[in-house]
Length: 148
Image (cartoon, rainbow, N blue to C red):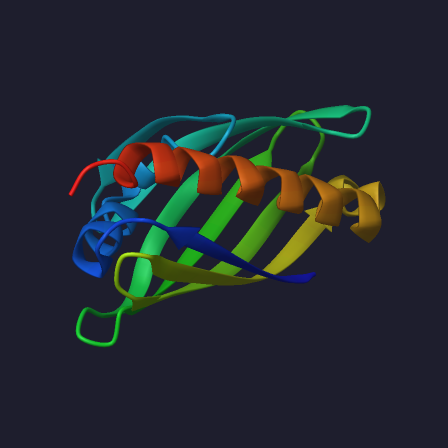
């Protein structure tokens, strides 16, 4: 499943970029994410989320696999499993920031849902992805939009 979202934040590009690449800080803006901690060259954490009638408890890691500060682009790889349901998620997310106050953040994701989780259906997962990105955008604006 491929998704693309654009978020506009009323903050300078440098502040937005620094916040996005501070993985534990940015993760606090994703509903359901908890316990994000460094683990070697990656970050481990948990995601508790309800998609339709199913509650998921995904444990996994996020790794920054490419980063270009001058261009304002980065690629993150995410992998996680829900042991109870016997499935998982593998994703690659590309971040790009442009403009300055307001700053546009473009997040393009390619997500593979594995095992029983894949039975949820793409329209249901797309709605949840859109809902999550809207909440992330609101949190990002609250965290960065009001300060210089």
